[in-house]
Image (cartoon, rainbow, N blue to C red; front, side, top):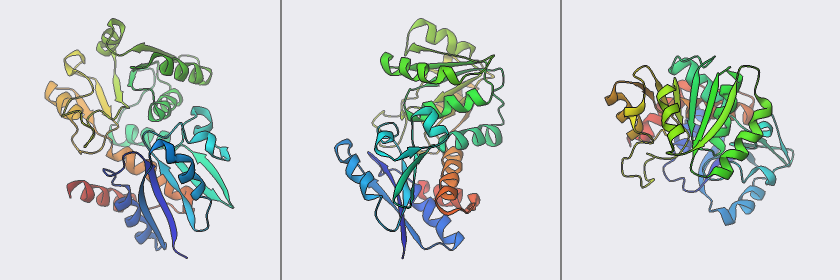
Length: 285
């Protein structure tokens, strides 16, 4: 029987995951397909229940469902349980298990592609959704000195910080501010690392090429990590580079978190070179 997997989100037309996973399945000799399942919020529960059917490996979960999907699953494991955010669902013996591979993907991309060690550093996250929760936990585990969360919904940011504060270690402070206030701008000038965890700049997102931040506030030695991967050079990455600071877009993280999902579904480590080539080809197309 051909096995099935897919990505659950709204919208998902921009996703390169189908091309990436189909290439990985072929390279590994696995008889499986991968689909893009556009899922408005009012159809999420039905979509999740369908994954319990025979032949489903599971699913990836993206914006805006990473937190909403958690209570619909049978169990959360590891970082998914710690953050309350799920980006990977594994179907096993009729049960749905929630995982979060964003943490692994971000940490690996930060280390290998950006060559940045967060230990003791001042960091800032833009956004307070599921991706931001995973990134914050990765920075906590990486020993960041300060994790400053900035977003537009005070209640949501406060809840995220309250949830994650018990997981911090000695030497790590996590705090927050409302987007655009004075403390945000002061902290932006002090940041060693800024991570855009919002969809600002995403192809088809309607932001009209607007970067997620004004790079004039950045130090020249700062690094900006934009989780957006489509387009490959996002408005944020382009603006930061023009300012003279370092920037990386989200394609490496996308591939690494997908590779971890592949391993969870199949027990096999995929060829990440095949995956990144397929992703780049889909973006170019």
